[in-house]
Length: 376
Image (cartoon, rainbow, N blue to C red; front, side, top):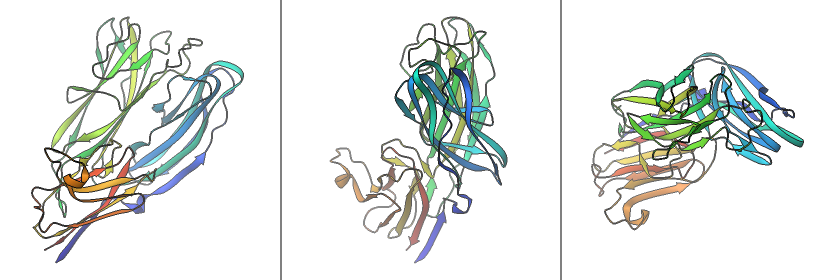
């Protein structure tokens, strides 16, 4: 027996930069105002994870996060007594100094109104096989009335499958963050992030995401006029769309963001992209990352771990049957739980070539920290 193992999560690069801090309160009518700022220097190219929540009291407003001046995420328009929690925001930043701003805006206020950003968390981490795109800034793009224009058109080269101790990579986790806004003369909150199949909204800037020419719906979205309040219409502009899923290796991935408005306007968008096979998107279904390839009778090992949230996750070996009765008949080995999840299974009777290894993150971002095989 020969044990071959590979560490995918690079623990030596991990560090908590900010843990649970809150911003000051914006308690007057104002456009985007920075209420908390941090500057950090990264020693190398790393992933940075950011998370926060925004609370609006007795008014209408919004919160957003910017990185080096590039908008990363926004709540869209929020009515009073409402909390909006960001998704886990994963981006890749180059070595050097970076500034993270946490901004608030408020355009309508009752007695005691304010906007605050709570629970700010920033951490750095690193994985093998990390790819990224952006931040891309479209600049101001003119939108003729009724004509869809391309704001962003970028390619990312995904290499051929890399050979692992236990097989080959067959899917990369893909995370795309987009913030778009009206930047016409006398701009207003009027940007809508549209899903595939949805009609365009008249008088609004309708923003859509395309992957390899096919339109993809947003996994998460917030429109800047969602609160329905038109006061101080230029304040707090910026709608966000967040997409996560999988994409295979050995291709050129084309990412486009397009916009259309029934009246002539101008729009701008900012895009961050991260790809990594070892960071599992919160898709909520079984996804295969590695094609198992090793000698029959060998023992497979995988370590799954939480990232920001320690939620239940599952690792399974087998195959979804033509008539499924659930995991107990589709998979020959299933482990699930919180914390560090260790999956060990010897494929002596079960055919290695026919078996699939799948991971179910159960709606939360998780990671694969080790893969190994004890060869027979």
